[in-house]
Amino acid sequence: MSPGRLRAPTAGQAASFDRFAIRERGVPEPALMENAGRQAALVIQHLYGSGPVVALLGSGNNGGDALVCLRALAAWGRPVTAVAVGQRPDSDPVLHGWDLPTVEFDPSEGDGGALRRLLGSAGVVVDGLLGTGIRGAPRAGYAAAIEAANRTGGGALVALDTPSGVDGTSGKVPGASIRASLTIAFGWPKLGTLLHPGRARCGRIVAVEIGFPPGETVNGEDWAELVTTGWAAERLPRRPPVTHKNAVGTLAVVAGSAMAGAAVLAARAAFRAGAGLVRVCSSRLAGDAIVQVPEAVFVDAAEADGLRDAVRASDAVAVGPGLGTGDEAVRQLEAVLAARGGRPVVVDADALTLLARGALGGISALEGTGVVVTPHPGEMSRLTGRSVAEIQADRVGTARSFAAAHGVVTLLKGAPSLVADPDGRLLVSATEHTSALAVAGMGDVLAGAAASFLAQGVDPAEACGLALDITGRAVAESGLGASLTPSDVVEGMGAALPGLAADPYPLNTDLPFPFVTFDQASPR
Image (cartoon, rainbow, N blue to C red):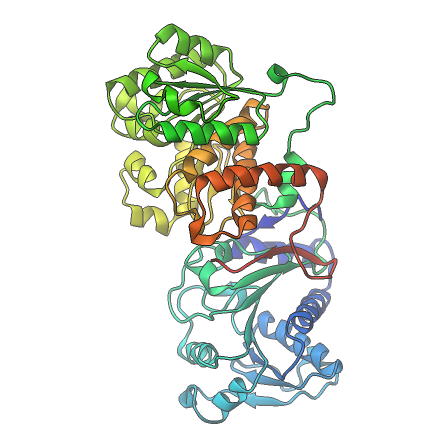
């Protein structure tokens, strides 16, 4: 599997591919279960190498995966116990003659008595209850087992494939759900485990290869694509050894007439992302601040001819950060859209607010290909007329429907950020599950980086993905937490980009197994 092609299927897509692998490609179902259980056992043994292991078993394949995991751990000398919550065969075929200690779960006991003591003494509790097939809230018996596991404390709680109770498609949690320390995903992380509120129930997510055949879709389904560091490394533009500033991407940043700092951040990020020349088109009042970017060329945006010429002389445009929402901002936005021709453009911040208010005819003013919009949920609410709560409840559907309806690449910022293009492609950022991003100015940095990659000739959706990866890694590697500022991110990009170029197949993991394909830390 290429490190640049890791997908995130919905629960239904994953189930369809399971059937395809078994029926059309001849992969034996027991082989998939054996591989899944054994890979899970290896990860558990490496991360949590001591203490008894107790597994909660459902009646389906997830319970079978957990039994294989227990069997492997028992063979390596770990004390194990199976807790049968769902109905399993009297002589389970996955045991292959191993006689594992097994107890029946009594829902009426809840988390008291013998079960409480058993779970409380475990070094690891394995969730093999419901997997990806759940729809709606878990039934009473399963819900009681889930609550018992959550209340044990002390040991690690490891979910197999998807924490029981989390919808593997939407991330919704309609009832009781496992609150895992670690989720071991089979084949690919499921889309719902990357979306909140489900993401908060997963802990660390590690995906392991279990023997699926090549090919990652069935019947032309659109699977979400993960923007990992490996994905970004494969798509990063490379400069030829002999070149010049006008050949490696020129960008016009039309910003800062109302808030100069936004233009500074966007321009600095654009340079850090690799642009060869950046023109900052802003008001004279913002000119003093622009000296913080001595590499940039200043253009007085109040002069219509100068603004038009700057746009036409550039390979791409970013418009909106700190632009303002008055009449002068409307004139500048109109001039940009009239002059851009076929040039790609990132429309951000105040420019989106103006369009949402109906300026220039509204969102329909963004005609032609190569248009990227970068709303946060509040801006998307203004653009669509839907509440923020509605948008947050269906972020994937919102991004995809907006992109398709208006013919624009849509970067919906959030945790995680999503990129949807008009043809149905969906990118999911894998590097930004952190509250450190909740600082004014982070969007300006992201817009500048995305526009920089556009100027370097990168496909619009992939330019957004690259911007999300490089800024996300700069955040993660800073270690600054809540003290992080957008300027710190810009400086961190200076290390993140060369590192990405140096290693074509990076995988950020400390696990020593070649079958690990994805490793994402718990949200912070």
